[in-house]
Length: 223
Length: 213
Image 1 (cartoon, rainbow over the protein chains, first blue to last red):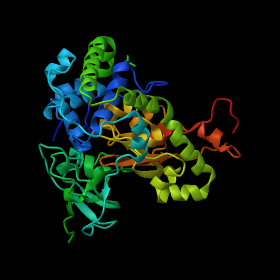
Image 2 (cartoon, rainbow over the protein chains, first blue to last red):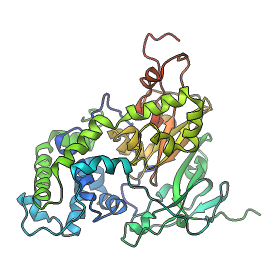
Image 3 (cartoon, rainbow over the protein chains, first blue to last red):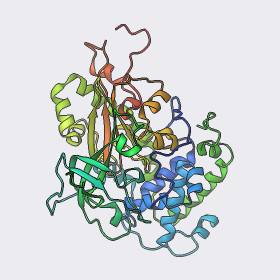
Image 4 (spheres, rainbow over the protein chains, first blue to last red):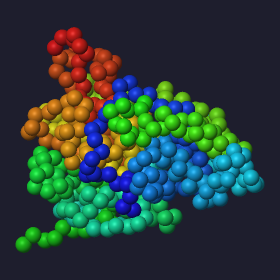
């Protein structure tokens, strides 16, 4: 979706201001929101792409006004409500208002280390050969889905070069919709800054994104 | 922490006025989830402790320091980063598919996630606020040189810049160049000058004040 989360190339946000000796969290509720999001995701009632969509699918003014962990909290509440696990009324009440649903695979303390060490790899076995090779000239598609995608606006419809291949990975665009992992070849695609930002861009700058094969088509033949 | 230089910083607003409101809302949610049996609070405590104490930039610093002293490891790190990093004990969540990009005197790499906050947790821990903020996410892909200036670093005009936007589950780690004047340093001492920012590409390793070159 073309939401406020898609920030590449935006103007007017001011300088980057690093914080000296920044702590991991700035408030107790941030600690809990982080851990609640991690733990509640464990039973697999949603996947990482559904989680990202729940966070980015907000009115742009809200997205820009909310702090990072407030967006996480709102996303988590959305995911829980959509699945009938926790209602808004229950959060107001602070206790359950009905019988819980059956949820398997709750994260236990004894599982935490294994979960973190194994992670959740997204590479899948290769079925079809890759359409592109390193060095191929491609053009990204000019697409504007209202659903989740990982092709940022600033690289849509742009010419670039295949820099590397990463095997086949879960395709976020279908995975976020519950339409399956649908693994696709994943490439790093490199763009010259001038092809993204015009003739005034830094000639010594290139930018790359990771792009799944459905985002790409061969570049036009140069006569 | 609230940022006094950005009056509209959302982090500032919550630190000031909505703190208790947020605490209450989060406590209520945790209470409902616990009573329904969907979470185990002790697991949450361990998750928090792990990312506050165990997993952080000191992990990545060890990877970089080893690459600086061990050429064979460095080549493996660049060619097969995920297993090379795992050989030092760092693996898993948000580090499942690693790519390591090397800075040289001619080339500077910078890592960003313009769409959210993708970051190599396994080697750097959780991202700092600025990495997740609109100023960084909007500007890194257009003006990385200017972003670097915000961090007090100026590179020669002819330095080539490469910016890596983390749009997939691939996670990027910058391998900074080893600074001059560190000959003979132990791996541990080298690791002490490898900051988080060096490994994102918003800083360079520097010798502590008074350190002779």
